[in-house]
Amino acid sequence: MAAGGSYTIVEYFGGDDGYRCGYCKHEKGNFSHGMWSHTMTVQDYQDLIDRGWRRSGKYVYKPIMNKTCCPQYTIRCHALNFHPSKTHKKTLKRVNKFLSKGEMPAERCDEGHEGEPMNSVHEKGVRPPPEDSLKIDHSEVQDITTSPDTDSTNSTAPTTPREDAAPASAEKTSNVTPKQGKGADPNRPLCRKAKDIRKERRLQKEQQKQQETVSSSPSPAPSKSSSNQPKSLEEFITESLPNDPLHRLEFKRFLCDSPLEAETAPDGPDVGYGSFHQQYWLDGRIVAVGVLDILPFCVSSVYLYYHPDFSPLSLGTYSALREIAFTRQLQQQSPKLAYYYLGFYVYSCPKMRYKGQYRPSDLLCPETYAWVSIERCIPRLEISAYSRLNENAQAGDALALKDLGKALVLHRRTVMPYAAYARKRKGSNDEKEVEQYASLVGQTCAERILLYRA
Image 1 (cartoon, rainbow, N blue to C red):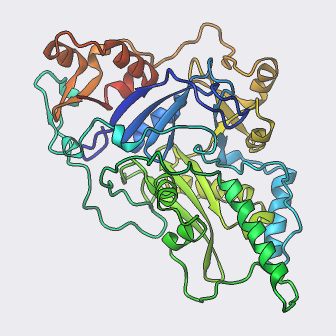
Image 2 (image 1 turned 90 degrees about the horizontal axis):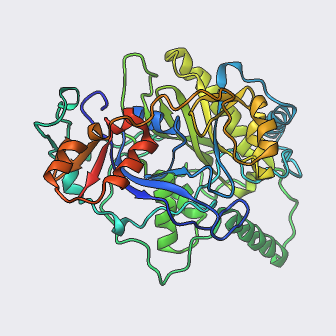
Image 3 (image 1 turned 45 degrees about the vertical axis):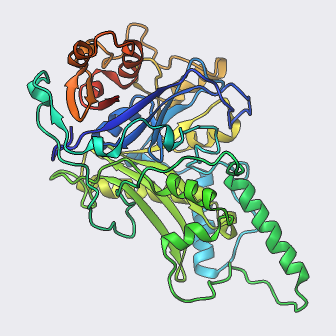
């Protein structure tokens, strides 16, 4: 439980069914556990990503590493000791040359790294449940009480989740909880990949140029907006999307929705903790937006969305370098905040190996949840896509589930340990599901996070 009494509240969905993998395109090879987070503290999310979880909007998922076709390893970079590679230095030179002289490079200097530092998990096959499948009613996360059976260490009544928070700053995502939607319309087409949308827009622009009868000399830089007025983040997101309300809604849910509760701490960074938008402006217009989570021990990069006219600048690489610098800046204010998380490293997909170029970096062992330097991991991954990275055969999961009865649940607006819930719900058949969930989040998180029970 975070300072101020906020709880993390989740609904668990399991992960028995396979679905299409965005890396190798296997139709039924992608497996992951998932849960919908209605609200989440930054400490809980920090602990979850240190156990291999990751969020897509409010959907939090964990690949089933020994079953999925393309294992995804959590990767972090030691920001304070970071050494840029030749590719990184080349990218910085190109961007600086463009900013100083207006010369747009003919092609990307990191050609082949299409994924950019942060890939849309929607593009890679993660399948969040439609919101109409959620069991919890929003009123049930308000006015929460605690059961007398709850251990004294968890008995502090939480405050109501903040729905009346002040409008977020330009860089910060809104923490206002939206009203529950009706879910996806099965009659509408599925969302397309952002990469395909960019290609289509570039083709349309080329066709328009060919149809123009008046010739003009090409500008070395992308043309400025027809208006000198700065564009808002809302305009930036929606101007590049198809005229499809469902597509726009899903895109905004992924880019803007976050379960993280904004928090501040005496020993934390000045901007506080939570989800933020880091905007990149040029000549009065937003050209890129990075979605970041600032957590107690790291900056976790979620996604980068940029204008396709600037793709030759390799903004994915450039933004990652800027975010590493930002992490170092925050570390001066909060010494424990020293890592930059790049999401997942997928060795079995060559296009995703570029994340390992941000050195020094570590991969998370999928069995012991210990960090292992990437240099020691590569030889093992060359032999097998899935590997126990920890070389200590005797090591285990230090936070493994030991007492299911202490896991907290939310039942009828009341917080109680699972043991008390099981006594009240005699004949309940959800013990295996709750045990699976608690094993995945670990004992510590299981005793803090509220698992919703109908």
